[in-house]
Amino acid sequence: MRGLIAIMLLAGLGCGIAAAEPIPLPRPRPPIWVEPRSFAEAVAGLEFDATDVSSAPTPCDGRLAAMAEIEPVPRLIGPGACGGRDMVRLDAVWLADKTRIELKPQPVLRCAMAESLTAWVRDEAAPRTAVLGANLRSVDTYDDYECRPRNRVPDAKLSEHGHGNAVDVRAFTLDDGRVIRLTDMTVAKDFREALRDSACRRFTTVLGPGADAHHNGHIHLDILERSRGYRICEWEVQEPPKVPLPRPRPALADAR
Image (tube, rainbow, N blue to C red; front, side, top):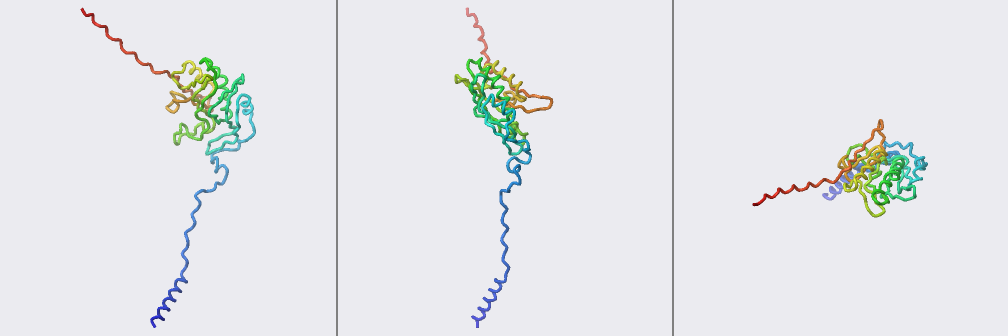
């Protein structure tokens, strides 16, 4: 009798389990990477206007190719508002006598900026190094195209470097092996003053020692257009601090 009751209880329990509703599984998690809806959202950011970006050579490309070695980089886009049209990599500058002035490393710039830099090297920098007793052989750059805020300060305005509109120059290398750093206070002052004055005529922004601590070791050059043709020229041609001479010794008393 007890066995029969046990069988009936087990049968009733089994019926209860079979009749219960299944427990729903949790919903699958959405993918971490959300597919962008457009090319601009994926690469350039919604702020970038790509309507005037083209791979066709421009008149600037033609002028620059006649006096420099360049590699076109026409579609440099994003992220965000960075990038620009008609970009080139400037490998070297040709002087009128076919002397080749290498840029190391080769900067990526807007063609207009590359054209200004090339003309400055050809017409200003190279002739002026002759007063140092040797010829210019290469230009040592420090920074060119880089998508970043000004001076890498978070939340600052976008740097002209982010548009390929600026280059930082650190030094000139001469054919006798000398390296002339543009911010070196021991380099002839009149040479550095002449370079500064020529740069401030050629570019709309020139920043070096005296501008701020970010530019103590290189010269920033750009061609940012401002209202009413306003320019910034902040490159202080510094001299080594003068070491004070020791005070003269007092005259010895006449011992008699």
